[in-house]
Image (cartoon, rainbow, N blue to C red; front, side, top):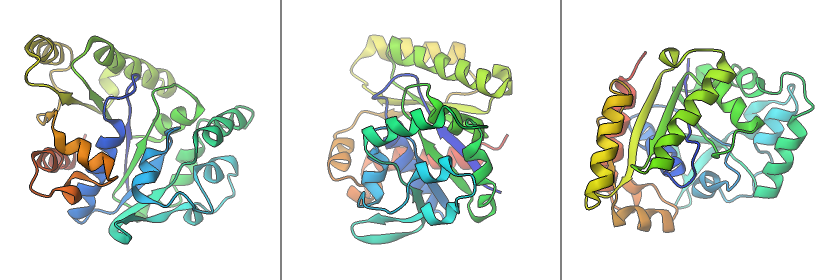
Length: 260
């Protein structure tokens, strides 16, 4: 049975897609079968692993409960080759994803459609990882409702740290649960060691607010990320020996061991 992970933060630009890409890739390298689901309106995850020309996308999965989800699952492509153990349900352009969200509003059980569809393939994968936008729309509600676990990347900036509580509040509303019932991991990301004031503030904030739910792995700011993102490659492919690649290897190990 797959562990379903939603990568989320109420603020944009905090490494959600970068985290999804690299975490999923490292898990697949370790032999786990990983399925990505791209909910982000920018579809950057799909740009990493597809040619953006797939016949089916996440909208087909959600709009028709009788749709065969297997048709929308594609092997992830890296440098023109299929990556073993890595698969994706792609997204579309911003306009298409915006229309999809609007079309979902009138549907019955609109927030549970991903969960129902994933049940059909849950035994085929070890991990399902959903990349989400910072907005609390119907698509995000589907990812939240389906997820067993949450990864919340955050910068050490006040608006990004506030975004953690926004996510947790949203999860509680969707799942009708309390915060201490949520299996989540806060991942400090894009952290600049030179910014001592924000660094100290972020460390203290996470230690006080989320002492049991902050990752041991910190994703420090590195130029390796810029190069990998420019080339639309996981860090371990762009530069296998880089510190950036090592960060996500470590994070993957944490996630593997983070069994509630």
